[in-house]
Length: 371
Ligand code: HEM
Image (cartoon, rainbow, N blue to C red):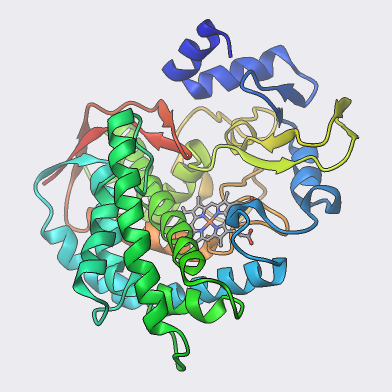
């Protein structure tokens, strides 16, 4: 990428892609860091649903699982254990939110809050205390949201190594266990195909852990930030919390690019593509398409009131590889927002709606005041 583009992208990544779209109205645009991006909603559906780009296995799990069937089984097992423990999560939220200081730095606080409220579902209380502590350190030590600073990334890598080692031992202890899963690790171990090495199961657990805590924590952070910035009067928010979460997922989708690899020479939206190239859908661009959304740049939770047709909405992707945890994720985020706003007024200082792009579109640090 050219230096000027890099600077503009870092300054405001969303304005940067909107500008690219304006300059390439054809529906498929070239990304300066490589690959292509689909900005037309119909082409996006073709890309994410069509067999040509969605055959074989999903890239989400890397090469850790041998088959698509194993991927599906694992995703479902984890989703089911989370779903069955939603009531416990809700109870825990009340206590954890009450213990928050009057002012806290977000999104880090949101990520830690989600981790703490799910702690017993992620690793049940009978797990070796050192492993549970190691996972808790992961929530604040740069393993959930990739840090921007090199030194912090090096520290996070060291943490990751220790956590994988501890989880590998734990997987070994749990092999052959029968009965209902007590936590997400049991669900992972139970769904892993026979013969998969313990270390691979531990790495899979970490993939799932991050894909739960990071997007839920960040979507919660976007929800409080955007609602506070758009309703600064000090009176209670005029919107139901689930509408705030839906609108935050539209306005600032954490998964801002969803990519598919090109496997054979093909033509898509008038562009000739070579094998190995990556073609992405940008949910942010679709969620801000003026042809389909009224005032897409405005944060308006009221647009979710009642039934009715809305524009393209893909915060969880769509098609065969769409997020298996979408409804659970929505519930986890909404419950956390309900707990934060219960009998409390929220206000932010230092809020900025421009994200930092790390593993997704992450809010820049801001302070949330609860009174
Ligand atoms: C707000 C929170 C979340 C967001 C925004 C989100 C978003 C996404 C997106 C965009 C994808 C990729 C879709 C694609 O490539 O087409 C995905 C995949 C996935 N997500 Fe989520 N996710 C969230 C929470 C969760 C939770 C709580 C779980 C727990 C079960 C989860 C499990 C997965 C799995 C297993 C996949 C891979 C699906 C597959 O390839 O079969 N996600 N998620």
